[in-house]
Structures are given as C-alpha cells and as structure tokens.
Length: 347
Image 1: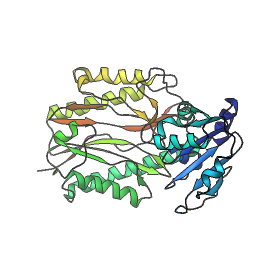
Image 2 (image 1 turned 90 degrees about the vertical axis):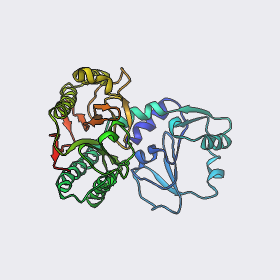
Image 3 (image 1 turned 60 degrees about the horizontal axis):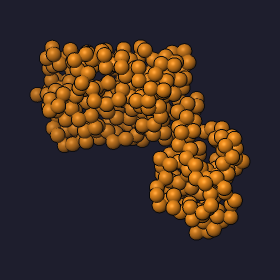
Image 4 (image 1 turned 30 degrees about the horizontal axis):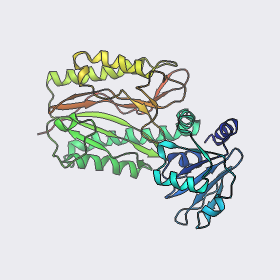
C-alpha cells in the first residue's frame, strides 16, 4: 500500500530510515500482514520486514522478509543513519530508548502526520475490503432481527455473541468488542456489554466486521416491546439528524460543518449528543480524519462514519451509525442494513 509514495517522502525530506515496531498498524498497512511481532524498516530505496519464527514467512512485493534473530541489533546498527523516522503515536518509550542505543547520534523525526494523510485516502483494494466488511456487518444485523423473536437471546451478552459468531462464520473477524446496550445502559455511549437481561425499551447494537484487516462500524437501534409515540418521535428525530448530515456530504465540506448540521436538527436534544459526529475508519476503527478539526474536509475515497446520538442519563440512549465515503461524484453508504425502527414483541 503506497510504499513507493512513502519512500519518495523519505527521499524528499532527506530521511535515511523509517522504523516501525509492532503493534504499529503501519506495519500491516505497508505489508498487508498482521504479525504477532515485527519490525519494518523502510529507506528511500529498500524495505525490510523482520518476523519471528512464530509467524508465516510471506512473499511481499517490494519488501524483503527476514527472520528476526538475536543478531538483528548488531546487523541493523551497522546502517549509517543520520535521520530516523518514527511513528510517535505508536512507539513505546522502551522501543524509543532501544533505537537511541542503536543510533545514538541520529535525529528522530515524527512521521505521524504524513502517514495519516497517506492512509486516509483509500486505494480500490482497501475500499473493496471495507465494503465486504460492511456487507457482513449488515447481514449480521438482519440475522439478529430474525433471531430475536425466537427468544433464544436473553441478555446483552447473548446479542453480542450472536453478532460476533455470525461475522466469524461468514469469513470475517470482529473489528472491536461489540456493544449491546438495553434501556438505561445505552445512555453510556461506550457501554461495556454485560449479562443484563433484555427488557422493554431501546436496544442499541454497535459492532463491525473486519475483512482482510479492514474494519466496518455500524450502529442500529431495535425496540423491544411496544414503543410509545414519544419514543418513536425520538428515534425519528435522530434518524433525521443523521440523514441531514448524510445529504450534506460533498467534496470540500468540512466534517465539523456536518457535525453542526446534525446537532441543529436535534434541537433541544442537542445537549444530549455528547460525542463527535464521526471518525475516519480503515485498518483501525478510529483513524484520520478527525471531525473536531475544522480544517479536515470530505475528499474522494476517504472512508468515515456518521453517528449522531441522544443519551438521556439513567433513562435511555440512541445512536445510528453508518460507514461511508464520497467517490468524487456521490456518497456511497457501505453499511446497508435497514434503519427503519425494528419493533420486536417483548415481555
């Protein structure tokens, strides 16, 4: 993924070497391999991936794969490195100190920003992988809707396990721990799924599949039992807040302006929307762009989420979320599961 572009960046900025240490997702980005432990060394002309004997030894175009042995430090220290690039957000203090011992006179430079810019513009292959992850995610929700009336799922944990099992049975991995929150538990946006029994009220499920290392993120709301008119109106308002933001997506539009549109739609409930409207997504569930940065704008092939929420403390919570991108002409919503409020009879 864009290895040559990064090498050109190193050359233009007179950086001798970039070194990435597990579990930095940059390693997976450039190699499309998720190792148990690894080092990735990239110079303006070469790239080397060092793996332990615990991992499969892959063949990767433009990257030399080597075994990580006890001689690694001594061999690597022979390189003449005046300027060393590191991913500051992902390197530990211990790893940083080890690098300083290898090249005590090298100047360390942070490449967090150029890496973020490189990664946020997805290639066709990345878009396909994210779309497939979203497809499995959407199908899992449809399966959940079909399963709930059978009363085989009795707790939040049962719901989460059902979704995660479906994802794995259909060729995916779980992108992040599934959130299943019923009633007042959903008033906490990042509720930790528990053994709380399902009962009348809103059930929020926030989950996503991962396919070939790329993530989906989707949130849907189900009502267990019979909703009141006010509960229906609350859901309709939230859905409108999301739809208004989705309709405003176009090239050059700031993410912060989309956030503002959604909040204005919520009216008096705006104060109960306690987080950002969305986030970038790809190899990681949360990555660039940042919605809180008013310089960040919608650009072609940058994948992100839109997820407004309403959280009434100790009462209930609602959130509707989709993964999407702008392809240069129109908005493509990748999570296609229905957003009609699903009402499941419940006692």
